[in-house]
Length: 414
Picture 1: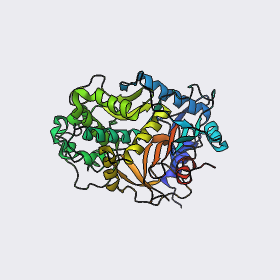
Picture 2: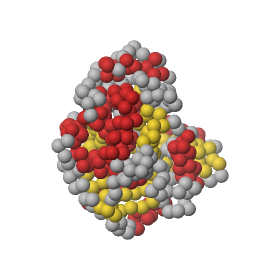
Picture 3: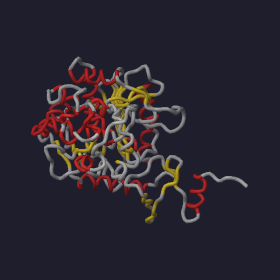
Picture 4: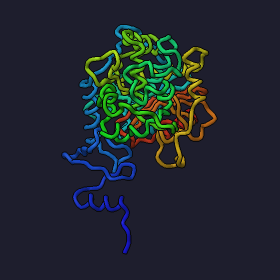
């Protein structure tokens, strides 16, 4: 007699009816439509084996592009304002070309001390959606960091007293666990909400996804009469981010749109429309319906990274916010760190605070701040060497370590 592992048993059962596909070592269900593999999850699963073919990548790129035009959103439009420009002296790289031609990498920018040195997009004709400087790219969880950056400006402009301001002055959250917390608790992902939300299954016990329903609905149902856990260790989830974002919207009130314009157009200097996804089609005073996911053009991601870098280098209020955030960082991992295995912006950074990732493997002695989202969306900022990497992708099967970590560390690609 021998015992078959649960994973092996699942693989054997799947093999009986179809080819087994694995994501992070676990079987994932799919349906096949010609050459396209359509998975049960809305997004393309990360770290797939076998890797997705171009027909499948094309399907998911089109799906994301369609959601940009379909979803309700807050729109920030620079209109005729002249955007912040960049000096470009791009160097050829066979490695980038190979990655853009054969993986889910869609766009790559490397900025070094004022100069764009590597710059590339997927070749014309590879996908139905044309990838260029006008393509709107989804942030995924990289948008969490934008929420923190907006919170910094709301504090510095006087809408919010400080990062320790209690959320009890927000009637919407009064009878929930979040109403018993401070803004910093949700920004640092130390809200004590681990019994009520999961990054994989949503808000408990109903398992409603936090980016699909309003905070009002959650406050009146799953979160009503809840209290935070006494255990305030780091616990990463998107509901906390949406609470922080909608608190900023609540505190800015009728000036919310003007506030977004002032930060993103006047300060960051975006060149094209940036949209923040929202759940409600109609905003209320208590709940704007905003979620942390946003769409922006590739160079506007770089402009956001450059704005963060510039703030860090100053003694401004926002610059001090970033420095204070880094001082609060706490460990977010319990297991070993990757050496030659899977790298990502989550897995390769050791600490977290204020919706940012810090302490990247092998560079813990350098001031590096990371924005990272599902599928490999990346803005990695070396605050000491003034280097920025921007990655937009439809899937995580590109070499994140070489394209992000190594180039930040060494200033060059293979």
